[in-house]
Image (cartoon, rainbow, N blue to C red):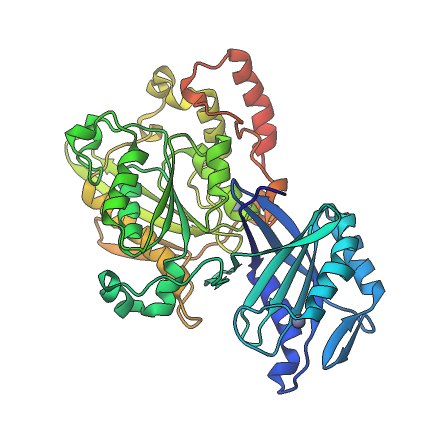
Length: 493
Ligand SMILES: [Zn+2]
Ligand SMILES: [Zn+2]
């Protein structure tokens, strides 16, 4: 684990609700009584960040803990928790509550319990102990205990995230991730949603997959609202036919990478104190881009490719990184001379939202076709019925609306108080000038349901270790055959 620069914890809303209800039960009755519980965690490993994913809480059974103002656990509770973690190939989590608010420091007794009593036995799971403290206001704080030359070393987490159906909550460690400055340039933005919301937005790590017509506008919006860490993933270069829709592109940029242009525009238009951009001019299914995506808190899916959508569907479910996906569909009439209809959609994807396969954004055979190259094979495409051919018709105002819909869906998810209604998807029909809210769920047998919070255990089989673009590199026919057979087995629901 040496070498990771950042550590984090993310809980599902269920794990959050169950542990909070248990550990805050006494404070809520006005009794100053701490409480504790164990849980299990799965690792999610990015390029620079290691995240503990927590979806399952192991509440104490009668007699497994003792309450005396402070709280202590019996050895059989610890043994049961370690046994459960081992059975699941998971790590051990220890949680306890404090009667104070906000990010919690550790008392001498806390350090002794975690460093000496728990971190060594937790080694039986082959993963480090993760410790969490819950303030009485519901604010989490967390650390990892890593074994280093017979010593247990503490790594404080940068933040704790909670992913739910209606909201996405952030609990920051201000010492590692300092509060953003109150800058005059952002005065109107802060006047809109308050400094507390701005302090979350300003510290987000956001990834954009696809820097075309929609992605370039999403990047602009993030830079303007003060997001300070932006990761840009796209293998494409700017061509002449992009200039009618690609924000900030001029003829001088033809031949440049789309990620380069986006990074340059962000540097010019950013309103954050300091902005850092990471650029990856490769596809999301190449390991460096995949790992960089796992370092993000939110991902925008602005690419109309089945592989990218499949990868992002995995990341949203297995790694608990919410994905905001969108798409534009245009239909021109038969003679291709007038607009027949257009609509654009945006969706949030997490384990609490419909996945991209169930909502029809892609299917398994499209992934295989992109992997083996037939999706881009002109002879294959010309044999398809007209209605099945990918349509690339689009105009700047449609992209503008779709990008705005995606960014606003993210903002709403992060800023919403509990009384705002649930919105999973939006669909705007251009002809009817009508927005519909769609709150459908996954099919009962959707395979992504079982991938929830499993982290590194769930990785698409085609993630390539080196930077290659399979659909354009002239793959051997044997590889195609292998993909057809093996791929369909792996992707079948
Ligand atoms: Zn304590
Ligand atoms: Zn699904």
